Each structure stands twice: as C-alpha cells, then as structure tokens.
Image (cartoon, rainbow, N blue to C red; front, side, top):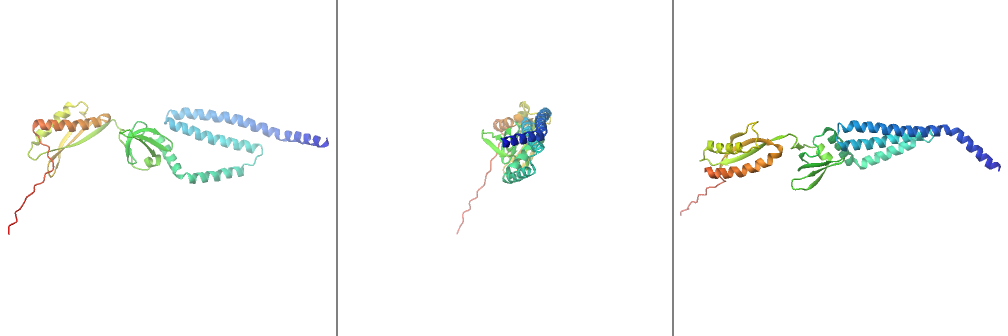
Amino acid sequence: MDNVDQYVQKAIELTIEYAPQLILAILTLIIGMWIINRVLKLADNSLQKKFDPTLTKFVHSLASVMLKALLLISVASMIGIETTSFIAVLGAAGLAVGLALQGNLSNFASGVLILVFKPFKVGDVIDGAGYIGTVREIQIFTTVLMTPDNRKVIIPNSNLANNPLINISAESTRRVDMVFGIGYGDDIDKAKGVIQSLIDADTRILKDPAPVIVVSELADSSVNLTVRAWSATSDYWGVFFDMQENVKKKFDQEGVSIPFPQRDVHLYQETK
C-alpha cells in the first residue's frame, strides 16, 4: 500500500512539474499549426498570380513539410525531449539521400528554374534535347513533349535547362525560308514574277515585313532563288508546303524549268 501511495505521490509531483510545459507545448503546437496554414494560404494566393500552378503546388508542399517539421522539433524541445541527436540523424539521412538522388536533385533544381523563369510554357513548340514537340506538361523532374507524329517524349529537366533550346512558338510570326532553282537559260525576272504572284495570292503571307525574292546562288545545275516571306507561326508549315507545290505547278504552266543535276559523259574511242 505504501508503494502505491509513493507512485501516486510521484505521479502528482511529475504532473505538477511538467504540466505547465506540456500545456505550453500543446498550445504552441495548435497555434503554430494555425499560423503555418495561414501563412501557406497567403503565400498560395500571392504565388498563383505570378507563377505556374505546378510551381505553386510544389512550393506549398515543400514549405508545409519544412515548417511543420521545425514546429514539431520546437515542441519536442519544450517538453524536454533531446533534439540534438535527432537533428543530426536527420541531417545525415538527408545527406545520404541527396548523394543517392544527385541526378534527380539536378532535375528538380532545373524544373524549378524552368517554372520560375519560363523559357517555355505548356503549349509551346520547342526544339531541345534532340526532340521537337509541343510541351504538354512541365513537372518537377521531367518535361513531357508530344511530337508531331503523336509520340510522347519524357525529357529530364536538366537536359532542357542546361543545353541550348529553341522555343519555336515563342513569337507570333515566323519567317518562311524557301529556295527554288531555275535553269540557266530561264528568265530570272519572269521566275521572280511568278513567285511574287503566288505570294500576293496567299493571304497567310504577311505584307509587313515585305517578302524578299533574290538570286542567292549560281549553283552547278541551277540558278537558285531564295524566298523569304513572313507568316503567323501557326501558318508556317501550311505556307511552306503549299508554296512548294504551287511554284512547281506555276513554273510548268509558264515554261520555267526546274533543273536537276546532270552529268555529261564523253566517250573516247581509243585507236591503236
């Protein structure tokens, strides 16, 4: 019976000694969680106005984990739990994971840079890492492209962030460069006139900047005319392919030849 009384007395003493700390720790946890949620909500509202939703969600998750971990460590310290060794273990584990996931961390950092600085965005057509395609998703570690033939390409973000990249659809207009060869015996001015008439008839080709038609090369088998015309980026390939077909048909109608490489072979009769 005396032992029971001693245990009860000891429990009462411990309760009196640690109750204030425990109550303070619980209040700190509750108030801290409320403050963290409030701060995260305000941060979300601010980030959504300036940055991509993917980045906003990621920053929210990362900040939430970090702030709550710091809060729990603080609460544990308030009730007398030794946190020094705990923090050291976490640090060592974090270092080991970081070394193991070094490549992924590089992709992660590159993904953040892409989301913040926006060298491209979802919907853009880019040429990077050896692939051309439309950006479908920008994820934390990878970017997803859809190629013109509808293949899905998943590219690590570091390959796009650390290497040259062409954003094909960044601007609203593009210059369409084309080369048409005519024979040395054909009339250059006539050929230019034929091409100009086709340009004038195509409403997709812009008047400003004005199209240019020049002799760019006296090649082995042809006189090459370079055509530089501007169109909306979305009309680029339509203009390019239609001009190839229309120029060929119009040249045939107007008697302008499109030469192909030829070789003259001379045979000599050897006499004894």
